Image 1 (tube, rainbow over the protein chains, first blue to last red):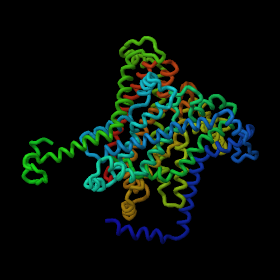
Image 2 (cartoon, chains in turn blue, brown):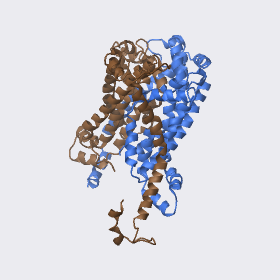
Image 3 (spheres, rainbow over the protein chains, first blue to last red):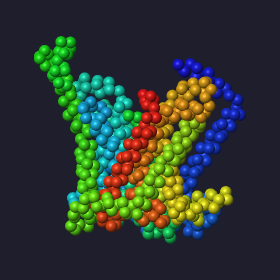
Image 4 (cartoon, rainbow over the protein chains, first blue to last red):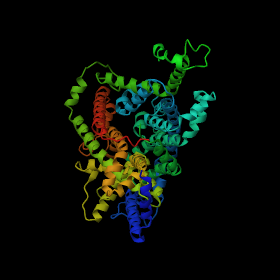
Length: 293
Length: 324
């Protein structure tokens, strides 16, 4: 009804005189750049702080671009903070968690969205409802249970639960599966393919963006997690980056601001690199799955 | 499903089976059996996970909350509702609950407003939008601990960025995390910095608003506000509800930011002691697992009530016509 009438308007707007258009573009970009600066300032300060001498960090007003650049903070930070080991430890948790979450959530999402069976909506409702249960309710019994089977001081409590589905990831995968036309799996079914073959050969290849989004989501969540490692890891050799950084701040935060900024920058870099390569898929994955039931 | 209801189909639906007249419903049931079996197979990880990682610990926790079980062992005895009664007289707990509620109630609407503002900005038509999008989203991927470390210094009363900027326009900034009156606003501002996830979800909603409807409204003489209010808002209302509910749930579970920025005691003067931190110290510093379980259960009930009320009160204003 409106497509026809909309045409003249957009054409008219294209024919608007140059000046107002230029002014509008300028305003837009000014606002966007100012907001960008607000978001970036803390990070810029962190990186510039990591390159400053101790005397320059406390300077007032702030020197955004220090005159004297030093790498001493990194040298000291790396000597006091075993970055490589913590990095490796963190990867040991993040990578299996990521694989577990992506695989299990895809399986469960498929079972909820693509197979018509009596209790699927009830199960989905229960899974969504569990997101309301605070982690603190389950935290204590889980801790004592893991301690009883000797899993404390291992990475297992931080990895294994992801293999049994992460509600948010299941939610995303289900929404994504619902958007794929049923004719595809019906055609495969007519050709005699079983559910497993349809899942692995027909549906999974189609949902790479959603899988990537779920994988990256879990990777970032595991990378950021503090409470889990705080609960289960007591040997400083098995700390993750987040946990190590917390203790490093507690031990040296007041005196060694420069090294702390250097270490924080190092903790951030791998995530930024990963996000830089994956951001399009990640944002696309979230956008495409949508949130409507 | 039953024989009785499917019998009439016998006369109308011919089936290729050898005995169509007697059991025409068998293929359908077989399909159903097949679906039921495979549905269970595919969802089995979640079902097992639900039992092992949710149902079992939740019931254990409910049971624990009625005992005086300790982290370091010793004899455990059943104390009934003693823990819950103690909570009512525990001033630290009341303080943690008040702080948590204030933080959640203040930060969720603010977060929604900021996320919506950012999403509207990103939905404008201009060059280089993908760059701005990445910049706005960047803080959300910064590991919380690293972000908290940086913000300790951003919020520093003397040489922090925030007070530097305020000082340059002639405002004497407050003590933020060292001032009990300003520590909560400090945490809220820190939270707003990482609002990117919600922003992306709202942006997805905005991109689903039919362009022709907005143009039609322009022709009908609607101003920018009227267009936003009458066309855009209804279409993104499901996304806003989603943000509201998940925000509330996350708000009541607030832990890492407060723990790293303000420590286990909720400094200064307990002004940042939130339920999560109080529960953690009760369980793992004081070893009182029973009491900690009671704190957790009360929190759970509050979250459930808050979520249901939100769905009830706000849910009816949500427009699902936009779902395609």
